Image (cartoon, rainbow, N blue to C red):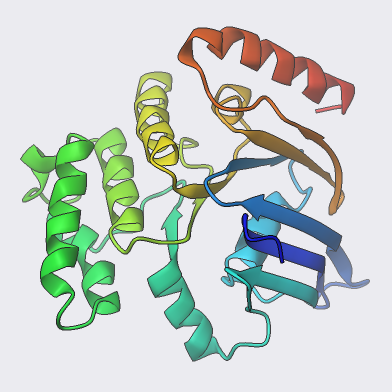
Length: 255
């Protein structure tokens, strides 16, 4: 496998047999994600984009095909082995942050990193989490409860939690979907900063302004990848032109 490819799917399929007739959600997806790339997955509602994200990350088992992370085939792993890969090699940011209400912000960020770290690595994990909170401007609310901070602060905390374990890939499913435009821009600035530091990100979004931040945007229709748009590295000065170009491409695809 090309050394620049960190994540790959080969002939990936997903069929839900609980429906009558069975529902084919993914139909033979071949996709490669390069190290350090911000890849955006778009498509109409029901196109299978979240199913693709969950299948790539091992949160959902595909029906057929393969997923490889850093050259390791994931689809044959046991549930316990896959859970360990998710904990140690992947980070996750969802539309709604999933935090434990009985823990403060800092402890929610630290929990998965400490579970993943060896006894010798615990101090490094703590230092990394503290540095991330400083980097993303939430150190001053680290001892607050999760109901005492804003939605934007919670999403930045989600980013800190996702990065604390030094993952190979961060998966983001509609990370700005529950935020207003100001908070959305704030979170995307943080996510762009993460990407520029070299982190690989695979993101699902329906928002063209968010998608315009991507190095590459792929379009999913009825479980099939039908086209790709490659705006290249993000430049703030080109933001409006990138969004306009992306919108024109999406309209051609019937989005």
